[in-house]
Amino acid sequence: MDGAMGSFEGKTVFITGSSRGLGKAIGLRFAAEGANVVVVAKTVEPHPRLPGTIYTAAEEMNAAGGKGLAIQTDLRSEEQINAAVDKAVETFGGIDILVNNASALHLINTLGTTAKRYDLMTQVNVRGTFFAGKACIPHLAKAENPHILNISPPLNLDPRWFAQSLAYTITKYGMSMCVLGWAEELKDQGIAANCLWPKTLIDTSAVQNLLGGPDMAKRGRTTDIVGDAAHAICSRPSRECTGNFFIDEDILRETGVEDFDKYAIDPSQELVPDFFL
Image (tube, rainbow, N blue to C red; front, side, top):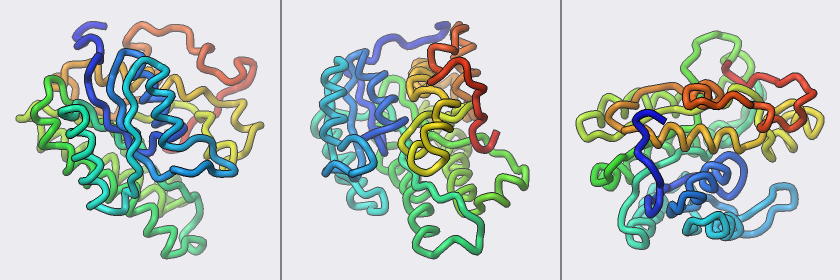
């Protein structure tokens, strides 16, 4: 790709919410090029409905060709975030990429939203993203090609997204606003800040368990497309690629990808667009 920085051999990628789903897929894509992948999540014991723990994910990073480091972290705790960053730097010598992927999801209207659910989404999605950024920025500033990538949507003020699930929308847009601010705040340090969001539904445990089940998942794509798109973004020179709201399919088309059927769960099915698009 034009402007690409090359392999991620020996680079360190710190990914929140990476025990499964999109976060794990992004980690595996970087691990395939020899990256150190810091698996940051809460899950240390197998969940009856959700596959994977931080330890099984780290093992998969090793098997893919990278070096996995599992660190149990509750993103609601700034102390735990700071400790995870310190451990990552102590182990690998620095941080090159921060991926803020972790999110709490609860799609419900205002009257159905409890304070507990509201606080969880706010603390994980916005606050966790902000303080993960704060903890990583001093280390990213020392990296050769530093990137922050938030898995959050383009800022779209169409009222229908707010009407359907106001609290969740506020918190996801909060993640995107972090990118808007960091891109400007950190540009002199050469730290890129971008958003990435899938064009279509992605087959994750959230879809399987909360958003329509296996029948809906058949109308989506695999997590690999987001992993490939994250890799494409972070391959670009950080000083030339910041402040963007990328869509996975669009960024991959720019890199020359033409066959998107390979990402489809069932190519015969009509794809479902993702939220906020």
